[in-house]
Image 1 (cartoon, rainbow, N blue to C red):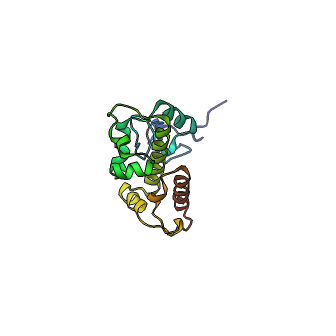
Image 2: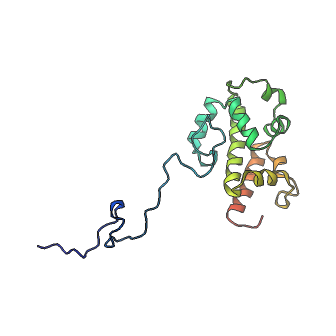
Image 3: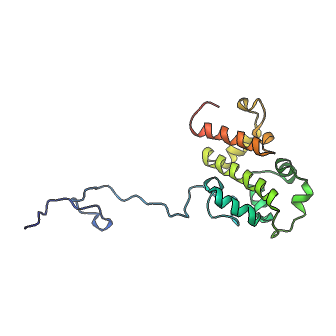
Length: 175
């Protein structure tokens, strides 16, 4: 049996100049599992964006506790001061300030911090610009009854409502 040299070969990265490939366009880079196009907020707690974490990964972070260092990263990315952050997390300002940098918050507060980081991570992803999203969070929104999204994120249900609104924006539904 003789081999026909005109039969196309499966695509191979080594055959860039070969015109007998089934696929002739250049190879597309595939993202490594740890390479994400969006930035991580809580860099000491996770390797991938909070909006991409599974429920089990989130549970593990909450049980382990979020450090003050991570809270400071969230504070910086969200462009909030301690007073605004305390209001959003429903705790006193002193609770946030008095922790040492490496100390971790209890699971209840860690859950709120992670929930807020998840919301901001998703917002940064959808808006593709941290500053634009932070401005959007501060502006009154008709879809939220004229309230600013920031004013609703002090509890789980408010964060859910804001996240749902971001989802509608992501899918192009008028909001």
